[in-house]
Amino acid sequence: MLEQKVTLDPDEIPKKWYNILADLPEPLPPPIDPETGEPVKPEKLEVIFPKELIRQEMAKERYVRIPEEVRDAYAQIGRPTPLHRARRLERYLGTPARIYYKREDVSSAGSHKPNTAVAQAYYNLREGVERLATETGAGQWGTALSLAGALFGIDVTVFMVAVSYHQKPYRRIMMELYGAEVVPSPSELTEYGRKVRAENPEHPGSLGIAISEAIEMAVKDEGTKYSLGSVLNHVLLHQTVIGQELLLQLEEIDVTPDVMIGCVGGGSNFAGFAYPMLGQKLRGELDEVRFLAVEPAACPTLTKGEYRYDYGDSAGMTPLLKMYTLGHDFVPSPIHAGGLRYHGDAPSLCLLYDKGYIDAVAYEQSSTFEAGRIFARTEGIIPAPETCHAVRAAIDIALECKRKDEEKVIVLNFSGHGLLDLKGYSDYLSGRMK
Image (cartoon, rainbow, N blue to C red):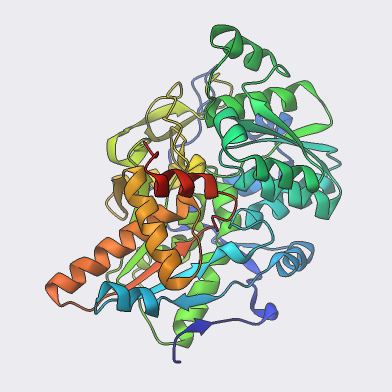
């Protein structure tokens, strides 16, 4: 059947990452050193990041070459990923809209996260780093970095938000199978973790707290660096393999989207999916396309946050970033979409949202799981709780097209599978979901 599935050959994996900093409508507000009040100096970041990632963080060139070792790893973990048309979902909804989804769930780790994990592991290993410390919410990022550590022979310690650590034991097991040490956060391993636990022994944890613990470990151990799974520019840069593949696939079937949809926690999967096409729009090479970011109502950073400078972690150890934020001490409700429970968003995404290039919408948890159920029964694939947010938005737009008898092309990033999130689906199906 035409347009059912669009695949690429392995030699079509992009050879360069796309850097949206080259095309922003105005310069990105710089990270601020809280001690001096001035833009942070690159050398101050070397205690937690390798030099090449710092260079990529500050890079202004439009494209950055992907090392062949990283492209080989991409091929090993499942790139390039296919683009599918959701014909059965379209028929179920009775919509004239066409719905396509980019399948990042087919990676070895089950999500888009390895796109930056393997790059970060490669650059750290090349600079002699022995261990990476990181945080994870739902466990997708922790799984990806654990996989990357196994591929490149580097140790990994993951501080997993406590509520997710207990909600998603199979994610922990997967990380441990790849060789990582997984610790529920807040933990007893760090000074900051012990401080939080002393104040509340039953603290559910947050990404901000887990980030603080991982950074503290990196600062105190010369052989350890910190690895971040979203928000910063070098992370979003690595993810653009998604959007560049997508451009080739859409060109192959002569399709131009009306709406591009991705869920947003820190912004990495949305940016990786949307930025290459959004860059075309910023350069005046593309007609009107709507870019829609979807977030949880329990952690509505874009839709209800303030656009200001804030810390990226709870302890205030990071530079200040200008972003939409709910406050670095915000502790979200323990929803199942753990990857979207972050108090801020990527500075580049926030600038583009502030300037009107990106729209945003927030959904309650139960409505997103309903969308996941519909998708599973029509397309046969179980979405991750995070991905359910993008599916929900696509369904709502498709139903609007039905009411208006309007044909639109909707493309969403299917950022991860939900095979390790069945506890959430069980709560939804049984009526126990809050």
